[in-house]
Image: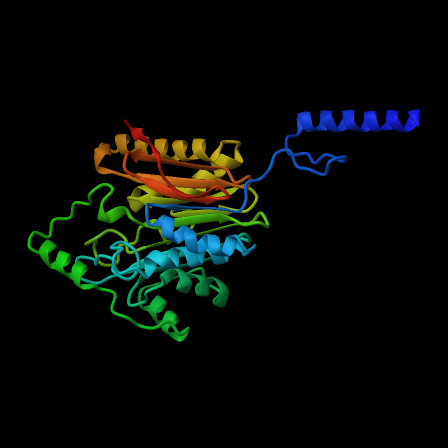
Length: 330
């Protein structure tokens, strides 16, 4: 009896030592993880992320796959004609044509993307079809449209009356001055961690209002507007796409997390890179907005932007809430 008691105490002591050195170590006696991974969790950009998160959470809460969740989530603003920067209802380019960009990435680094796609309400689903049904990772313009039609996506007029009216008003001056935090920066990017511990992400937009026809920003570019590494974490971006592309922004955020930074620290460092390059190039920082959100494998998140006004939606076991991101320009 004394021998059994001694063995139990020795086992408990060894387990305590192990836990002291490894917060994610599982105790042999309790079978409980001390460093609990927060999952599922979904995070998305801007206030319409609340409704998008609801759709994603309906899948995640039933042990669904993160990939299915992020696609379903971003389809919500894509289908809303009142959302003027994503999908149906998005503002047109300077020629009056609504062109859409989107990309998607799963836990195995499968990727799909479309750019400058017209007449298709859900570019994110076309991007997924590119990922799953073609040997390519990106289709653009007419080629993307032809593929979408071949897959049964309906061809629709995406230019709603309100957007057309704004475009015609803009034509009177044809002055291209993107406004920070207004119509030009409402890309929706979404990343999720499911109950299996897998990450996926999606990003979709109609891009800058009244842009040059053919302009493509960061949103459909893997490594710029979205990046997922299932060993480390995921990130997505919003704002001036040219600035995000300049630093391969979301890949940078994930690599910084790989080096040991928290999601918050990684987002802050990526913004700092953009700030530094903007100053080097002699540009006015107040004319630029970029925001990053990030999520790691432990379910920890971070967000940061150049200037105030960027918010994001977070949905986890505590509920779905809108949060104002911290920012560089105080």
